[in-house]
Image (cartoon, rainbow, N blue to C red; front, side, top):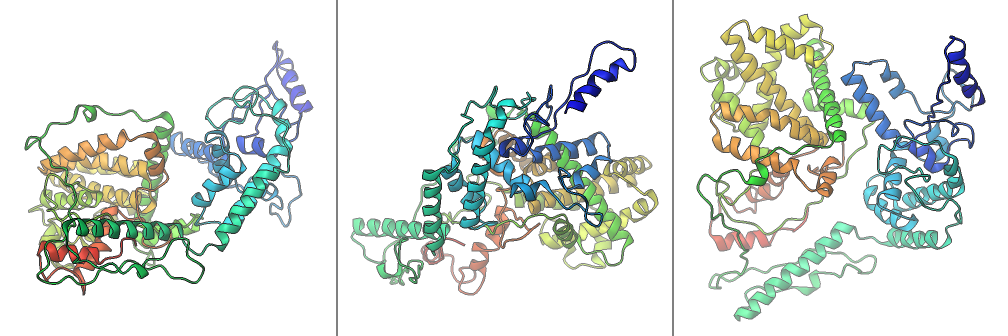
Length: 587
């Protein structure tokens, strides 16, 4: 650091200019929190432009610069392992890394830093939050070890923050105690009371055989049965008998099993089953106007807009790479397999299986104004719009040579087969364009398509009504598979003009309402969705997110169509209630 200040003074002097230069620091939030820097060395500078930003946000910013300002050289910096170069190379490879020295990854430190500053968490409250956040990656014991390790380092090195270089206050998790963090800098490093509470809680969790969701399911089962029983007794009917032995307390001893409540068969001459729920009826006009609150567009934060540019560019580049490989390589897997393979190669962490708690069944028509549109219907509608807009273009004749039921496919039915067929068709249309173009960026491909579309009306039809909608379908599917909320909103916004062009007024009207509503979600809900919690997953894995509607179709609705289901047996409301009550309330 002495040399840095020397060169700062000599730099202008050597060029015959007056004054001196400022010295910039390079420590980030994560290193400051753990004290992973030398006091009065790298902490001694005039300004630290990145001192208030975590390593994960820094990487996101560098990726933004790569894509937005066309600086591919930064990719090498992103790929390099973080290291202070304290040890010589071993066989040409880095032998010392920052994450190994600190005992945790920068991603973990980023989460811990936000909980410490924004959520005001101490050791025990942080542990209680992280056992849920990291439950699919780490055991309670491992979470406890990381929390205690962090607070030991934090308390031992907190004194270094009194001399830290002033930084640009970019985020609310800044640890700069000189201006924004007034916590003490001298701590008892043993944290005896807090660590003892963590150890007790860890021991209880390790010895507890019951999963959190299972406990919730048991409580919900008991409540539902109790509600039904109470209603029966009020009416003087006893047509539903409760087998109390089938429900165990959530605090049952080890070895006991928890099962769902059993509802015995109801006699044919029994009265109606009290299983109705309150329906909020729509009382407005047949064609309701746009609500005033949703008539204006919401403005996202600058951070969200920057991240949106990054995710959209990344998705476009990934889809372009798929098209280039699938058209030039014989062994390239299909779209789902290709992206799963690349996600695994990039080190994407598997996401947890979704546990769903079903609410009571609403026996109403999907077209009723009281029901809500879902994401699955929107993508199905986009495929049907492609079919209607491409009518009499020869598309159905070409698809009929390979696929059956093309008429239904182009009307939005047979959804998985439809999407695959249209994507394969678009691939063949783009074959000569991609093989001759040697595109480096997705924008280059879009410019080439616009140039082709300008040559004739037929070219315009195929580019604007087939190729571009297929690219939107790929982006929309990617948003759900990866759980990318910003990509989902951006892609859906681009889908809206096709609803208008195809004459699907309801989808256009309510699609705009949906978009405006999602842009104005409360901050805490947006936070959940930005973490990918707007999608569901059947199993733990990567690139396997599903729309909630599709998840229900493949679970609850599938049970109704399979053996023991309700479809093909009877449509009596009372029989439907019996069937619904007999299903497990969680999956």
